[in-house]
Length: 362
Image (cartoon, rainbow, N blue to C red; front, side):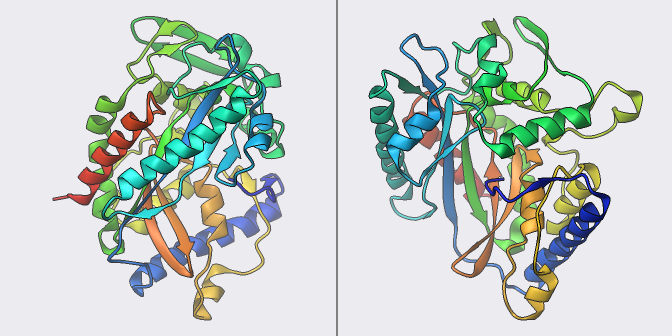
């Protein structure tokens, strides 16, 4: 979803062409697996750090882009709201002191962000949901002025056909309707990536699904939203409901949410992607010059652009990911359910716990 060269999936002929590329990408990824072309025998980890910016009253900031400009570091990217930024940490081979090295890099980059924020009398906060968020922070002026965010909000609202609704019950209850997707921006996560061995992908993914509940239970830190105490980890319900494309109509009740845990054990690599294509409407398109199967037949490795774009609009809590590094394709699982904060030590401990469990799958 980082690319700017995308368009809304409206034109039937363009959708048909893109869907063809999408199906060919799934066939290509299965062929890459069958031919033994995936990188194997090595495990890498990576992470994405989302964090909040607050003013001197601890209210959400409007100045994330100004902080981003002051930081001047390619590890940083904007997020949906003007009070969030993201850091992409360098991937590392999971050996030796990889975790402590990742911790050091994270602290250095956050310190850089902290200095930039302090220069405009603001500061950074690590929290799954910023407790001081109020209803003002989900109004349209808080959306980062980027075309892809505006288009994402517009198409999801169009598919839904009515206002978004939050209905979350915990210690307290939150029942509210809203006209944009900015409640999604209330969530900040520490998203972890784990490279898996291609011949064990199916078992590794199902193992990651099995682990999700226990791992989340030790990491939860986000009970408060709009002053109400809800779930121990309110981000789960909030993210699911904040960009739900399903309306109340009877004919839509059986459609799966775009934010989903899944509905069954997977049976193979292509299985998980085919299921997503069947269940989720195309949101965006991009012009693709070369067919992935043709590229593969030439002895080259395709980027699978169509598959990666569609996969980026299906927000699984454990998301399978395809990537190419130095001409070598790899498979990884992205853990999207761990919250940001409350400290970098907590986050690295969560990553250590999860990656240790992944590495020791029985």
